[in-house]
Structure formats: structure tokens, C-alpha cells
Length: 430
Image (cartoon, rainbow, N blue to C red; front, side, top):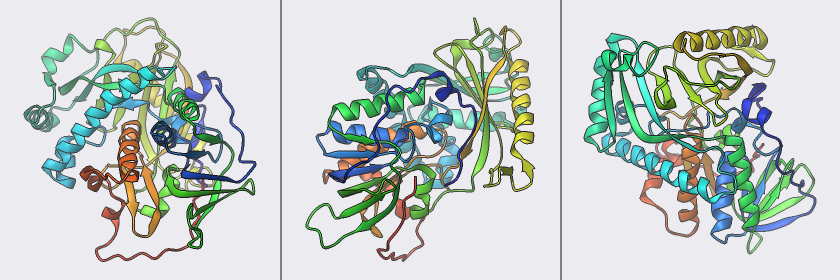
């Protein structure tokens, strides 16, 4: 399996493991088996169990220690790309609908966080998408108008108005009002898993599923999942929520890259950073910045080629050499942006595999080649919102009430015209 995490991620470093779940030590039967216990799998297991569906959640390793541990923890309706870019990929009406669904998902996540014993550090924020190069002002202004005229609460700022609000250079920018949020993804994942268990789901860690076979001879529960623990799970349906590994069945992912992040020690104030807005720049290199509930700053970006199995970037540079350079660049960039914030000092440096789909959207739904399976592949910066959307759409699909919105995320959109897959024995590794 691909090594997705490098360094010492903030979320797993500052949080103790709240609960350790058993490994699969007996055969299980259920209506729905969810493979993958990152944030996506946790969200789906929670929604299904809450709806009264007999659910088993299977983690290949420790819950929340995969891609979730290096998640940005951001919820932004525009993280799939600008409205202009998304329109070029999928069409105007479809792009606006995706934005509307993502914005609604922020509200739903706020309600969900409030229902959990641990709100996982959920905090509403404004977000700023900006450029510091005047050559990009035209694009920013066009994007602002598209958002404004399609009903989103946005404000356009220019170089003059930005000076009193931010301590770093801004040529123009779009402020999205109260439409974004921050969360601790590790705490959220564990809170969802605990709530799923309370609703009746059975949870198993360190129980990687290495094979899924459809047994047509069984009257019910004809999906047979084989675990490395030498036990089986028999299910009516399987949800493949095992992150990047699920792409072997669906396709659609662009080439992987490595994204670096740095988290500071807690600071006393945020001078030059109005309302602690989530920051994302349009220029190269692309960067994102956010704060945390315990007053840290996280800055991430500076993507490089993917880390191969030998621990080398692009098969050439050693990971330690490039990582050290990237972490220094992030810290320097942060201090240049916020000279008024005292005590900015790196405490955690980490990197993770980053991948997205061709159109920047998740892969959600079923496909003809695997009639007993549902897919929930939610990569990219907006994985938390995609996971929320996936959990609702898959629940509706399972109940026989599929939403028309499923077509926006269907796995078949990456299949060649006329593709006719055959049902074959496959492995689902996690």
C-alpha cells in the first residue's frame, strides 16, 4: 500500500487516542459493510447506523491515522476550484449546484458537530481567496461577479481596502462571508465512529480487507469480505471508502503529488489577520493558511512530485532533503506575511499524498461492474464536505430514493463511452 503520511502530523500528535477498537476476531454478517475508517468511512458509518441500518465499519489500521491525519481540516464551498474553472469542466448550472451543495454541507456539518459529544473544534470562518499579482485582478473580479450573481455572499476587496485588514500584499481578493469552517479532522473522525457505535454499528480496527467476492449462491448478504485476521464479513452491500486505493476500481484520479504543511506553536494574537479568515492564494505557489482552536497557525502547500515507494520525490530527490527545504520555505513565507504575530515558531512538520479527480469532484455512487458496491472517494482539500455529501447521497441510494445530484459524482463519468465492465474478483486493500 502507498505510504500516504510523512513526518509528524499535528492532529495525531496533539490528540490522545480516545478509544481503541478490537480487530475482527469472528465472522460478521450485516446489511452494509464500510471499508475504510478515515473521515469518509466514519461519516458514512455514522449516517447509516443512525438511520437504523445494520452496519459494520472496518479499518485497515488505526482509525484516523491515514490521509485523515494530514487533512487540512477545512470546509470551504469553493475548494473544488473557482466557479469559473469548475464551469469550464462540468457546465455552468452543474458548477453552481456543486457550490450550493458544498455551502449547504457546511451548515449541516455545523449542526452535526453540535450533536456530537466533542464538537471537534468546529469553528465558523470567513474565507479569503486572493492574488498579490495585478495581472490576475481581472480573473478575481470576474470570479467575484459570478459568485455574487449566483447568490453567494461575497465581498470584493482591492489593494487599498486590504491594507487595513491584512499585513501581507493583496492586489485583489474575494471574501466569502461566514461560509467556511475549521475542524480537527482526527477528533471529528473518532467522534463520528463513537456515535456510530452508539447507534449500533460494530467497529473493527487493524482488520484490513484484502478481497471482496460476490457469492451468487447466497440468498442474502452475498458480498463476502476477507480480512487479514482470517475472518469474513458477509454483507448485502459494501461501501468502498478506503481513500486513494479505491481509485483502482473507479479511475478518474489525476497524478498524485506531495503537499507539505507546518503547524506553529500556540501564539497569543493574530495581528494583521482579520477575523482569522481561512486564506488561500491564487498565485503560484498555491498556499493555504488557517488557525486552530488552540491558537496555532497551519500553512500548507508547495506541492512536489509524489513520494515513491523508495521514499524519493519524483524518483530522484530524497524525501528528507526536499522536506527540510520545503518546511523552511513555509516558515519563512509565514513570517513574511505576518510580521506582527509574535512567537511564530514551527512545532510540527509533515507531508502527505495529495490527489484529486479530473474535475475536482468526489466519486460517489455505484457502477454496473460492481453491482453490490457503493463508492465514496473524497480526495482533495474539500474531503470533509465531500464526505458529508457522500454519506447523504449513498444513504438515499441505499434506501431506493436516489438523488438526481448523484449524476454529478457518478463513477461512470470516467468510463469510456460504451464501456461494459465484467464482474471479476477484485482486491480492496486498506
